Each structure stands twice: as C-alpha cells, then as structure tokens.
Image 1: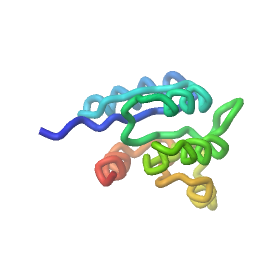
Image 2: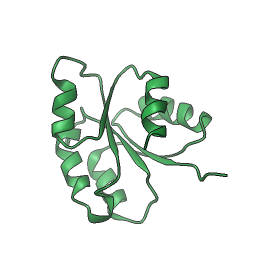
Image 3: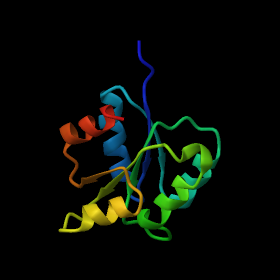
Image 4: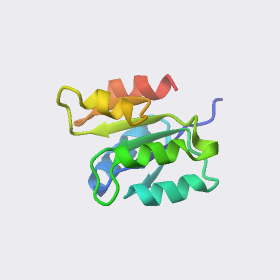
Length: 122
C-alpha cells in the first residue's frame, strides 16, 4: 500500500482550511494547516513530513507571492511542489503565481477533480 501524501494547507481563513482538509482527508490525504505564511515557514524549517503545499496567495502580513520564494529557499524544501490557491482568477494571475515560484495554480472555488489531478501528478 502506498503511503498517504501529506498536504500542507496555508490559508488565513479557517473555513477554507476546514473545507479543504475535509475533502482531502476523504480522498486519502493527510493534512497539516497553518493560518499564515510565517507559521508555515517555521513549520517547513522543521522536520514535518510535507509532500505538497497548497498556498493561499492573498493573506495579511505575508502573502503567497512573498512566501513561495522563502519556502523554495529552505534547502530541504526546494523540491516540494507548491500549488497556489487564489480567488484571483483574472488574466495574468496564473502567470504571476508561477513567476513567484509556484509549481501549479488553482482558483477558488476549487475544482476538486482538477486539484486531485494536480496532487496525484506530484
């Protein structure tokens, strides 16, 4: 049997974390969550097992555009895929997320089938 993948959900809205966690757990994933980018960076500097990161791009204090390059510069996390999750679905937003270092992009409301394809491809 394959080990479950662990997904780190970073979002400043606990309702989004709750909904995403419930959906991912029902699909066989383990979930960790942080309510802010700095908390996530602290967690990722530690030894937590994280296979993929779902990063909300619009957060107070430090947004995903600032946080992604910091996470990518954590030596042991440089290869950890980061999927940007954002309500920003305007022309150019996907490119802006990818330029910040994201490995993938999904807009809210999240298309569960699309997210599963992205997670299972990692």
